[in-house]
Amino acid sequence: MPLRHFPATADAEAITAALRDDGAVIIDDVASPSQMDAVAAELKPFMDATAFGPDSFSGRRTRRTGGLVARSPLCRELVMHPLILGVAGKLLGHATSFQLHLTQVIAIGPGEPAQVIHRDQWAFDFFPFPKDYEVQCNTIWAMTDFTEENGATRVVPGSNHREDRLEFEQGDTIAAEMRKGSVLVYTGSVYHGGGANRSNAVRVGINITYNLSWLRQEENQYLSVPLEVARTLPDDLLRLIGYRRGAYALGYVDDLRDPLDVVHPQSGKSGLGDLEQVRSPVSG
Image (cartoon, rainbow, N blue to C red; front, side, top):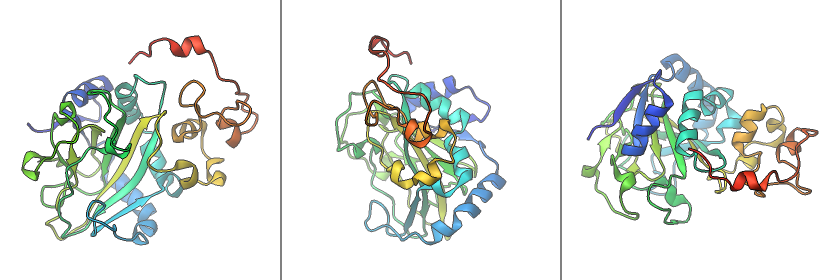
């Protein structure tokens, strides 16, 4: 079945419902082509300095450039996009909070073969999470058009409801074709992989993903974003990076201080909070 497309004006509830059903959706034209060009210009020095991947999974003709919160003010706007955060909040609303998992430009060069089909949540040491218990909400922002020929991400729709550790062939997948500025949103449980680039141009996308706050982040945000940069960022972004408790008694600093107090002292937050409140069922 084809992936469902939504306009950027769509309701987060409707997008999340389709995401739960299919494991992946496309939101068209979330950013303008000129906005994506500005992001590309800001990131170009870092992308040019990035080496190709060391193995077939990361891609020997693919460059993966991270640390985008520290390196790109424009990428911070993508990370904090209200519609994307709204979808992530609904998909991951069964936990106390969610956080930024990773930021990465993925530039697939000509001649790169297709990536093995996988689940992103396998990053958590291949832990078998319960079926339909989502731990990630992932996005790929198209910095160039995504086509079948240039290596558009390939997805097995509905595979988020399938068993773990399955193996799929490329013929089981469909290409997430979309225009520049559009966003592929997919769960950590859906089977997918980068497509083969049979074109003469580089296919570029920005992978921004979110995960439950009680899980470790794939990209270490505290080291990727130096403290001197973190101190210039707004509190909402800092909390998303991970400067907050991920659950009751999880992630505090020394004498029960809130992590945000380390970056912005005198924030006035301390203690573990209300245990009875956090023990109550979390609404989606």
